[in-house]
Image (cartoon, rainbow, N blue to C red; front, side):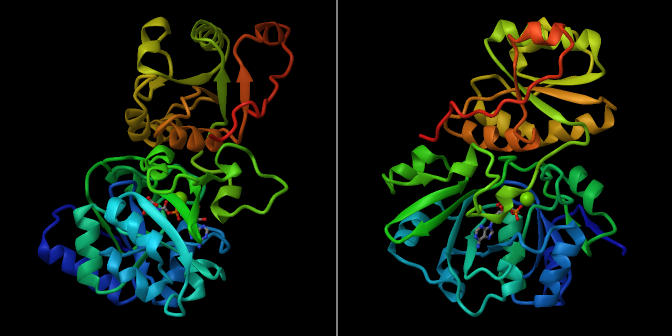
Length: 362
Ligand code: TXA
Ligand code: MG
């Protein structure tokens, strides 16, 4: 398939992309979080083609993107809480799951009776939805399993030849996907953390919960959000997170740099203490927003380094950090090792994978 690359974003080209959507085609659009792979949410065939283009399992539902929150009631049963949240956070990086109306085909929701609604604030996404005149179903525009694309180069790498058009919106502002919450009567639960934090949501919903799958592996329980059961956001080489005091982690990294063909993902301030071989940073340890912005780009960059393993710093799980933590533990398949267990390492024993059960959701 020939993919139209739209670098010059103007009214005429948005119209071209909107016509493609109307005719049942696939268009990659930038959003403020990550790039999305869009299709007319009301067109069953187009929606089915989204799963094919991504190689996405047909049991992982798509988010429906709207030009404004008032349109939500055409596709979902809204309530007072929805409008309270919409007033504060829409347009923006918040996705709200509501009971679905019959207008949304089951191809979008993978047979579920609920639908995920989001109103992106990115102007290109907004204009495309409005000009198309229909809701746009869009997952992140990566090949299934890879880190979500946060730049035009990332989407071209994954989607060129698989979709009808890609719109260049430069780098995404946030760099991690939206916060996903499900409304349950008067309350709600966070299924996927993002830029809109637990703390911010608490101001409107004081008893909002965080689903246990946000921080823990859910092997035996049915996930509330199907996307949570898949290994995600992963570069080709296996990722392991390294836990411990700063000095212990740095000496662990140093040791590994000398003895293994590995990549190191560390905080900016760690850089001066390590050799520059195969090392990438993802922001300062106390700058969660920078970490969110950098993480996916850096995970992708390791693919061109030919390293056999990647060791990464564990970010804080406070504020936006919870979202960074959530993506990174999934990229690592929940593999966490202790930096100060050097004895075990020196003896040449296999590294143990630890599950992080000490950290419980706030
Ligand atoms: O920022 C974002 O949310 C980006 C941009 C493109 O909008 N989109 C995105 O979509 O990240 P995707 O498909 O990669 O992730 C959507 C998540 C998945 O984990 C999916 O399982 C969950 O939302 N989801 C969608 N509909 C759902 C539903 N009805 N019930 C439970 N979870 C749902
Ligand atoms: Mg995704």
